[in-house]
Length: 499
Length: 96
Image 1 (tube, rainbow over the protein chains, first blue to last red):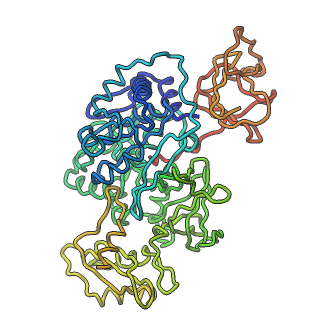
Image 2 (cartoon, chains in turn blue, purple; image 1 turned 90 degrees about the horizontal axis):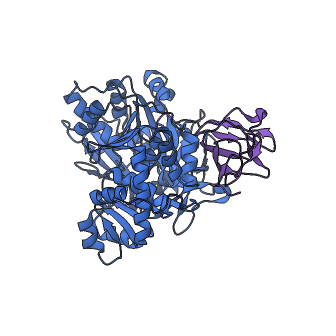
């Protein structure tokens, strides 16, 4: 099995149909397949063992992904936001590679690593000019690795997660009906190409026959403009983007967003007020919260449009709370909550989220993290309620252990956010002589409010939770550190509180 | 047979990719499928002529076989004479 099949089938069904719009240029499925075959030739000639992308989203991402698949080498998009030293180290781990993107930078920081480097324009042009040597030549059967992604490393050094062709095809074939999109359907893509959601979105849209509209560099105004111009029907955003889009929309309410039918989000925790506002501003769009990890080829659980609307309309606190859940597992995967010994826990009990299914790789270049029975311990902590809804409380590594008692930062943060003068909050472990670890919190005061008194904050937590959750250390900050995907960088808050 | 193997119908234009495979003969239009097309086409059996649809997955009752149609044709798929049925994807509400 080889993921190149997805593009081949789309081109077979409609070679002249528009597949991709980027920077005003339109590509048909036939164009993309021909370029992927040209890329295969370039990759073979170069002797590269990886194909890397060091660039924002563009047609090059699609051509490189499928060209690498045809050539049987892993596609490895890199985070161009990394500092030079970190990036040079990652490039060194995949040498020799055919690198598409920032030529100047690769030359400067990894010039001696033996890479073949093309700029985006050069790559797009060369792959179109290069005609495969022989139409009948054999492409890779796809038994190996299709994609290698370095994890974001919010807790440790980046790990090389690998996704096999069988994982990615298992995900796409199990969740997307071939050629099911209407000719007018268009998906707006803003997720960076080095994120799993960016890769699975490309494959899903291509297999469904949905036109991909790329916005290489996100701005809320640019996003709204493209929705109107290209009559976008589907979009995936991370929570911070949605908040900014809503603010921009309120400043330009005349923008025609009536074509938007489906807005999916994921990648970080969605603030309740943002999703509530989004449901009000875009009453005709269906919202989906998608939860997944790099190691699971993207989505494994989701909260769908009906659940969103039902939760918003309900007076029942249990149903309203579903707006903050991850929804239910996909029918194609199994999810369990387990304790520290790996024993499955009943509904309502918090523990670590485990998952298994065809799409789950759970594999790193160095070793597989799968445990007996093919289960993948996600290191995410959460619980499943009695109705089967999955709730996330944070990374298992973020749990605060105070004198043997496990505390989830999420429950403390949720209580803090009910305070009218607190806009954002982060709880994490601080060293404690007496308890080993204790609770520390960083608070962002809300604009127009005075920062709450430390005693107020302590009283609030003591009243709503238990005295063990009362913070030993409180810091007031202007803003919390997030990465570009909206992931809170807890280790930086930890450092700040330790000082 | 390895997953990923492509099989061609001897009786029509159908081509499939093997996703899962057990013991048994995979047929289309009533004739055994192979990696190469035979020089002479097999006759299309009237009992196996309901056609295949591009992009559909076909499975047997035991879940041992799963084939993805990558090129449609007039024949229908079977294993040892027993017809395969389509398996639908469980579409996500466009999560990505």
